[in-house]
Image 1 (tube, helix red, strand yellow):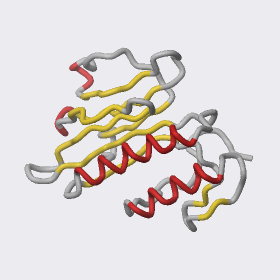
Image 2 (cartoon, helix red, strand yellow):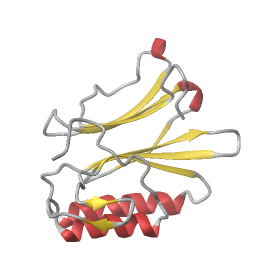
Image 3 (cartoon, one colour):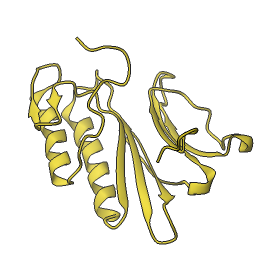
Image 4 (tube, helix red, strand yellow):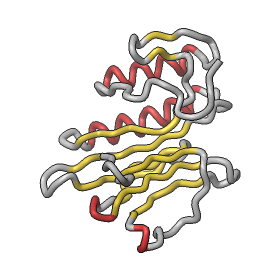
Length: 166
């Protein structure tokens, strides 16, 4: 998805974006879901215009957005971006996000499925599918581990992408 000299596809979290089309000279299509009550959040997917990004779904109670891009005339990819703020400790918010992701995956079985974002689940050891800490509730960690196993999703990024961890 990434070219040697330019970004083709990006999934961003914790940002604010003015709704509307991206400037055409940039050559990107953008879909986003901003927080309604706080400028410090939201999710965005940007893709080169040639990929034909189209909006599929925005989460009702979650910071989730999903779009479809064209790989070729027959093959599509579903791109979903989720931000789970670390202070959202209620199980229902986690369940809503998992249900949205599960519904998208099941509805688009023949498409490539890419799930990105920031789940803020530092206790999960994604290589071994185990829980190593107590920063997030065990129920929320288990729910996301079960979702990954049920949907056959694997973690590709296994290091922090920003800052340092303790």
